[in-house]
Length: 330
Image (cartoon, rainbow, N blue to C red; front, side, top):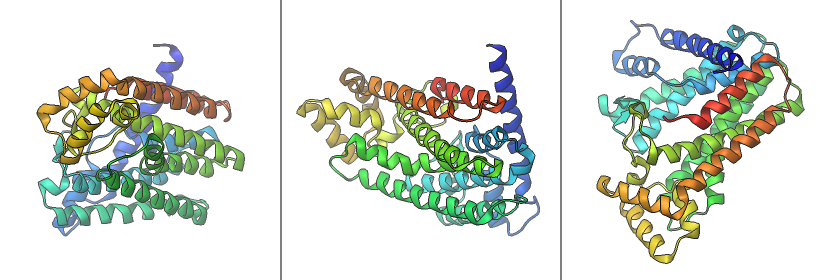
């Protein structure tokens, strides 16, 4: 590893630790009723890459704002992300998240809904704790993100029952479900650091391309992950009937017999024993390679956007972050 990469990795680890240490302190250990706050504490103690808050902190640093001064905003985006996962797990009938039982499995669905509701409210409260922040604009950006994320999630669920979905429609869904929050992290970091309007638009473009790369990589890892840290069954998306990028890219070029094979199984949902065969077919049809190429393309577009931003040390950490995303295995 080059010296600059080691420095970037160490700095990102330092920012991640800052977030990790703060999250469990957001709800006091003795707060009652336990029926609500114990699940909330359970979520806040969970592990994670903390990609979103780190992106916000790095972007604020890019414009000269010390991380500690914008930490509440970084915690807000991570808490909001945690809220979406709690509710997503209910919608996806997921039994595990990061190697632990999901909230609705460990407790029940009603408790998980309340836990998520509390986390969303906490995210808004944290935004108001950033000193000297343009709160009205922050809230406007935040709420627009919520709208777009919900739109993307609605499309994702609708696609499960639609017989045909195009790659273009998939990307529209991803720009909401995944990209909107990443765009917000970068824009909030820039806004709090004092970035000009042109740079805020560039940060938005960076976030959109990062979101596409991240989600397509996630789709790919759903079929190819080998690390135990992946934390989900291989092929979980297929077993939920999700039309992911490798599937859609393959089916756009596939003969009718292959389309029929996938369509029938997606409609009734793949069985675990059918996943290896699906992966072999997707490899043969070029779906996995198309996903790899798409990840590389969108990351390159993200790097091009980053190159238009101030050439300051935090930009090197952001570049390292993009490189790590391309290499991630979980």
